[in-house]
Length: 143
Image (cartoon, rainbow, N blue to C red; front, side, top):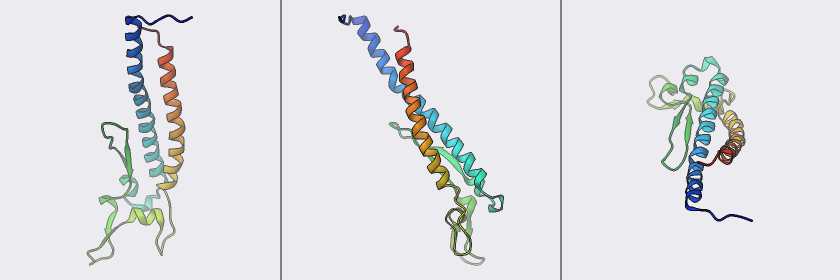
């Protein structure tokens, strides 16, 4: 037999439900940030030192809109952009040449394999983090 909810019990239940999204978002944010840090570190380690500034160019940036959590990981850019040859105006970003190779150099992938491996782990961690947040809410004593 169930008891009807009185006003105080209903208010307590609403407060607990309102906390769930914040706790899940906090858990997801932590998992995403830790994964991004691990990806950047692993990518940097995978890059041969002979590739100049490429390792230093690998970075993560929070690009979250108000309604989501989003981190962008990039490699290349101004640190790795060079002229095609002396006297030419055209430039190229050698980060792409390292990742995918050229007609003169074999590919040395550092970005995509790391990203793919970590995204699989992130999905697993997010499921666990969300379950943990929900379990924490369930085990809290009512106000």
